[in-house]
Structure formats: C-alpha cells, structure tokens
Length: 284
Ligand SMILES: [Fe+2]
Ligand SMILES: [Fe+2]
Image 1: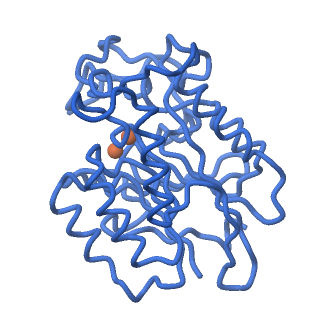
Image 2: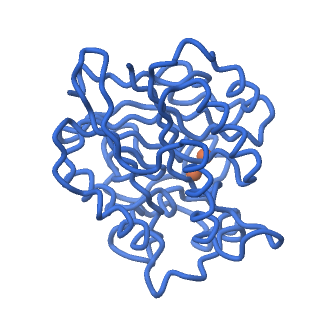
C-alpha cells in the first residue's frame, strides 16, 4: 500500500514503452500509481500504456499533459473534445481521474486529488509563471503545442481558467492528508533549481534552444491557489523533465519524469526508468 508517481513517460519512444510494459506485474499489486501526463498524443498508445500500468498497480490515477491533448486533422477538431474522450477511456480502463481515498501501509489514509491544468502564457494573465529570457522568441515558433493544440470550445476562457474551473468541485476539506498532482507547474519556485531569479534569465551556457523560454509554457499560479486551499502535503507534477524534490511553504513538491531517452539532468529523485515512491512519512 505505497504510493508511487511517474510523469512524462512519452511512450512514442519505443524504449519508453518497453520500460512501461516491463513493469513488474506482481511487485505493485497493492500499490497506487500517479501518472502525471505526457504519455502520448496517440490514443492507441495512451490506452496501451495505461492498461499495462493498470494491470500492475491496484490503483492508477491520471491527468493529461499537453502532448496527450494534441490533435490531428483526422481525429479531433478540439483538444477539449479529445480530453472528454480520454476521460471516458480512463473510466473504461478503471483509471482514476477524480479524487479517491487510499489506505496506506501503516493503516492511515490519504486522498489523492488529480488537478487538471494548462499553462498560462504571459499575454493570457497574471497567473503565468513567465520570467523574461534574454534573446527569446516570444512567438514560440518551435513549440509544437502552437500547431497541435486546438481550443474551439473555451467560451472566452483561457485554457488555464477552463481547467482550473473543472477542479473547483474537488477543492474541499478532506478527512485525511491530501496528495495532489498536476501535469503543469504550480509556481516559479519549482521551475528554478535554487532561488527565483529577480531579473531576466539566460543566456545559458550550452543552451540547446536559446530562443525558447520554458517559463512561457510552464504552468499557472491557479494551481498553486488550489494546492494551498487543499492543504496538500505533497504535490507531484511533470512537464519540465527536471526531476526534483523541493519543499516550499509546507508543501513537498516532487517531479519525476521518465522524459526523453538520453535526458539525464536533475536526477534528484533517483532512477527515472522506474516510478518514485512518495515519501509519505516525511510528507504526512
Ligand atoms: Fe513531457
Ligand atoms: Fe508537458
């Protein structure tokens, strides 16, 4: 009865899918797994990966990441429509997308609360986590979401507002400690390895994408507001592919992404090719 978490398993890489499919079918039978998005933009691969994990763990929780909501001309016209389809698929697979209470190994309980989200770009609102970068391209020409994400039914809301509103029904008082999770980042503190810079960031040495500023698409402080109202002990997130454990203001923030093959930066949480066990004794 342990709780594990993993993010950004990106099973479009065959070696990542192989790792997912070789997760032990006996070691985790009584355990819970949180999957914090970026599995695949292909529904068939998302289904294969989630079913495989579902057969290894007693409970699997999931929120979609940006890659999971990419559309193609031949399938969904809108990313919201695709999200609704994914939620139905999860329900059919027994993958949880709503809060549930889990009994832990010491007999205590915890609530796992999935938080849907999207990033807020600087032009979309003050909830953006944007920090200006020297020499950046504000049009995000190289960011695939700009081509593959389609919002046709947001009714004037920003994507971050739309998803935050979906969570509101679950921001209540729970009768056990809360572990929340999201794909996107909830605050600037977790973006940077140390202090949040006060001025512009970059240029960085050996920066593979000097014109790309991740903080434009990192997350939203709307998540932070919901985490604070939940009183989460642990918040797990993905998206940045920088694995870390960072306590800030009474919350232990943890990110543990499998990421892309060859990425080996910021491995504070140990082997990224296996899920991380959440530190419940310290967290609770
Ligand atoms: Fe990712
Ligand atoms: Fe992502």
